[in-house]
Image 1: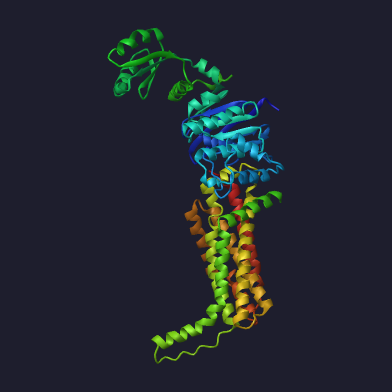
Image 2: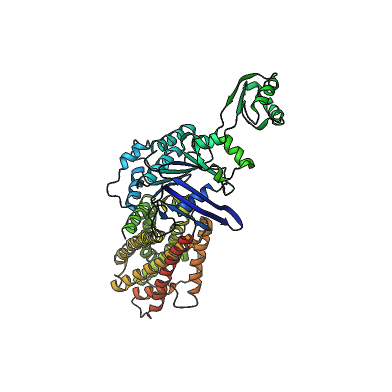
Length: 312
Length: 254
C-alpha cells in the first residue's frame, strides 16, 4: 500500500461540451487534513461526487486506501454533502441506527458519537426540527459511524454561522491523527486554520498542491495592512485605486475599513505609502505575512505556478 | 438480503410515520364499507329522486343484490386504488433524489437496485394491507346487507385486484426513476397508467382485463380465464421495477 490515502490520476469530467474537470492529478498523504480549495464552480463538489460514487468520471481514476472508486469493492469512506438532507421524521439516534444497520455494525457507538458532535442532548427530537448547524454535526456523525479511513467533506462549514463553523472545525481538528480528512471549501480562513496540506482548484484545473506552511512561505509576499476609521472607509476605494497604480504595488484588496496591499518592493512601498495616507484617519499600518487568501487570489488571478514547482 | 431487510424496515417505518399507511388504509376501508351500502341505498335514492323531479316517469329498479355490492367494490377500488397508487408512489425515488437524501445514503453500502426493490416491496405491503382491510369490510357489510358472496370468487377478485395494483405501483416507480423532478415524474406516472388503460381497450392481454375477470368470478358468472393478461401484468410489473433499478444505477446523483 502506498503512503497516500487518496490518489487521483487524470480526473476528467465533462458535462456535454463543458469540461468541469480537466484531467488533474492529486495525492493526499495518509493522516493529513487536506483542504481542497477553489471558488464556487471550480469543480470541487464534482470531484467529491466522483470520489463517493455518486457521479462517474469521464476519464481518469481515483483510488482511496488502495480501493479503486467505481470497482466492485467499496472504498472505506465517510461522506458529508454540503447541505445534508435527512429523513425529517427520524430522530438522530434512529438515523444513526439505520446507517449502522446498512454497515452491519452490531453495537454502534451511537451515544458516544452524538456526544462527540455535541448532539448528546437531542433526545427524541425529530431531525426535521434541527437547526442547520445541528444537521451538519449529525452529518459528521453519520460519516464517522462506520469508522472510515478517509472522511470526505463537501464545504462542511460554509453554510453555517460563525459559532456553527467553529464547532464543526473544532470537531474536524479533534479528528487529526485518527483518519485522513479531505474537505472542500471556498472559505480560506477555515482551510488556513486546520489544514496540513492544500490543493487549489480553479476552473477544473489543479493550480497547485502543497503543504500549507510551505505554500505560505513559497508565496510569501510582503503585505501592508492599513486600517482607517470607519468614517473614512467610503474614501478607501479611491485610495485603493491610487495605490494600485503604483509600480511597487502588486495587489490591493479592501475589506470594510481595511486595505491589504501586496507589494513587490518593500523599500519603495515604505517610502511612498505613508505620504499617501497623510489625509486619512489612519488607525493602523502594519506589514504582515501573506495569508492563504493572498496566495489563492494571486494564483487564481492568473499568476499560477506549475504544480511541480510547489508540490512537496 | 440483509441490506434489503434494513431498507424495507426503513421504508415501512416511513409509511407509518408519514401517515401514508393510515391514509391509504382509511380510504380503501371507507370505500370497502361504502360499496355495499351504496348498492343498498341507490334504488331508494333513485326512487326519492323520481318522486321529486320525475313526476309521471316510471322507473323500474331491480332489487339490489350481492352482485351490485361487488360491482360497486370493483368500481371504487379500481378508481381510488389507481389514484392512490400514483399519488403515493410517484415521488418515491425522485423525491428523495430532489431533496438530497440519496446523496447522503448512497455513499453507504446500499446498492441502488436494493433501494428500488425495498421501495416496491414497501408499497406492495402498504397496498396489500389496505386492500385486504377494505375487502374484509366490504365482505362483512355485504353479508350484513345481502347474501354472502361466493368466498372463492371474492378471494379471486381481491387477488386479481392486488396484481393489477402491483402493476400500477411498478409503473409509478418507473416514472419516479425517470422523472427529473416531482412534476415530470407525476406527469409520466399518469401518462403510463393512462397508456396501459388505453391499451386495455384494444386487447384482453392488458392489466385492466384482470379487474373484469375478478368481477365476473366474484359474481359467480362463467368467466373466461384471462391467464394471458395475468402473465402480461406480472411481466410488466417485473420489467418496470427492473427498469427503475437500471435507470437509477445509471443516474448521477446531485
